[in-house]
Image 1 (tube, chains in turn green, blue):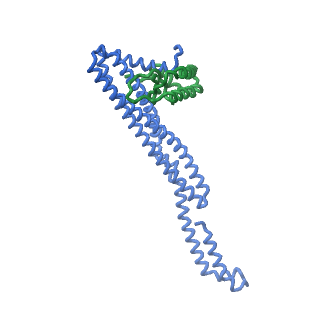
Image 2 (tube, one colour):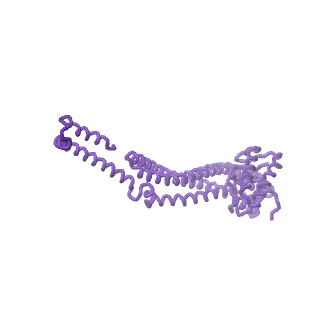
Image 3 (cartoon, chains in turn blue, green):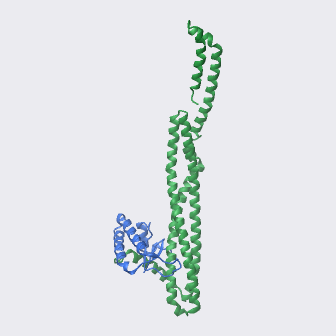
Length: 92
Length: 272
């Protein structure tokens, strides 16, 4: 499956890694829901590190959409909240 | 409250929803291709402008860093000159001002690194978008040539969703870069204003470069003192025998040479 790290690009990630990524994502989501900045940063870093470790970058001209999208590495809590609603995206 | 499904899925859904909304607006799916391609080209232009804007800000900060570095070097030199002249108070003043500059320099260097990183990110993003836009253009022509409007739908949807996601990503990257650049420009503007108003010069060298003035005065003063000593010595040589005879009564002829010698070491002992 294809996973995108915002600001960084897309990665081809083996399906077998899905469960592990979902668990890391669960930790991240819990931190975001609690607005817990101290837990948020390591959770995001752990998820990103895992994607980079198990995934390989796709070709730049690959037009396939991603199945999962992860916020950029230096995203703030506020930016992630915006990404979860469409106010985070620029119209057009 | 949204049911737990993870941040990744939710962000993806937001991106997809946006692509679908755009697709729904189009009557003929093939029309979507040309319209989207136009938007892609516009976004590419925007990213390139973004890269140029960030580079401009970075260069501006670089110039400011250079100016502050020169000023810091000058204060350092003044501190050394002051110490050499035995004026620890002046040296301390110069070093205090230098420390003030150092704080600003560190701040500017952080800004510089941040802008450099944004510039790199945007450059990479623009290359990635360019590759995808090229791929989209090829795909678009194939779809238009080979398929009827109805048949094309699925293929268009996929290509459109893929490119739309990339555009969303790049769009966000530009926005972040613009926000950062705007912040930096405001701070750079403040420093430029400081420099232009002379307030920074005051930090560096006081209202009238007082440290330098003091050093110069000491330099000039030293010359005058030197001259005075030499004159005194010359005069002393001319009148010494009589004065010595009066002052050192009964000490004999051998004493007459001593005062002249004594004047020399005193003169040599003056700080250079």
